[in-house]
Length: 214
Length: 214
Image (cartoon, rainbow over all chains, first blue to last red; front, side):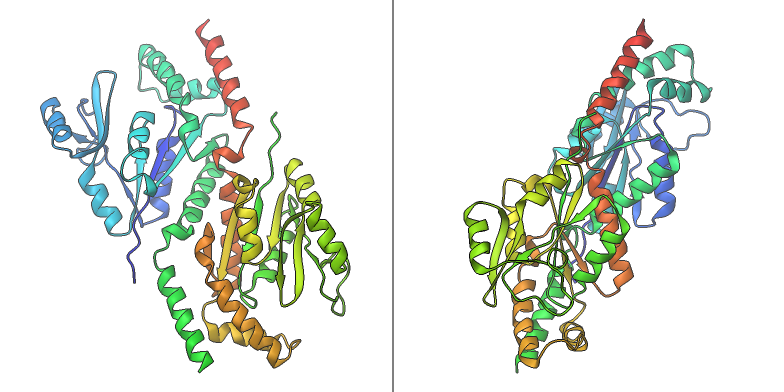
């Protein structure tokens, strides 16, 4: 049986559109999904664990990984580097598991235009309104007004890239949005090119036809 | 609001793989789906109504429609012509409704390679085994052995075209197969290129950003 190669599922959205919650729900739904933990040079926040939220790296460590070709994508945002380490992703998809990326448009663009592009399914989450986006950023209660203002500017930049994605969902209802994400993933797995085992099945049917004619 | 253009959903499979049952279930599920009633030159069977199962045409009428460019696709099978009249399909998709085609690989190939190709979603249904396919053809009880033998030959020819379709389903469980078809259709409607209204939504978000900066 030909081994199925996993998908790279890219989830992007402006901060506050529900992307991280949706990513968590998808991970809880399907054990065939692996989450791509990003590497970053930013300082860990309270409660964040190395290897869970991020792989925390020094600037030198990070840039060495980039130089050695160990990053699938990387970008600098607000003075910090973020990137997706290549090794765990390649191990997962070779094993037939799909990998979920919670990354911004810069990362999405790099993976979608890399050698792995045939395995990419990209989804952009739009907020129902900017008022709602700002409300969600404010009620997090963990950021200063300046940080929120910065996020709003970045949000506008992020949203401007919506048209580079395969699927677009407007998150006006979190449960509905979750259900749509699952539908997209289930359908993508049913595409002919995602099912290498079909060739074997058709070969068996042809052998049966031959036996039938004898 | 930009009007959504409907999809052309092509369902093909060898005779006996469950395609017609699945088509009926899809039609019952979603009122936004229109069924493309084929035209044919074959004699009506008992219980078949003109305009419901088929549009029954004389050979001359049929060939005139082809000559006048009124057929989306057509082919000759076992001495009879079959084809999909263009007018009802164009009316439906212009109105934002999706159209379901229960047609063979010859029809599928013509639509998939026509000017409408961007609107096509094609699904091929494979039987779990040839033994099962033959069993289903026998238990229909409406055909002679010769007709069944002819269908088996045509089935092999039909199956050989499985790799021309976007999605492939193995129908080893009718309910599961139905559910997968619905999943595919739901996901296809969530593709960015299928949602012309998104551009308006993003325009509104940008206006909100502008107001926010004032």
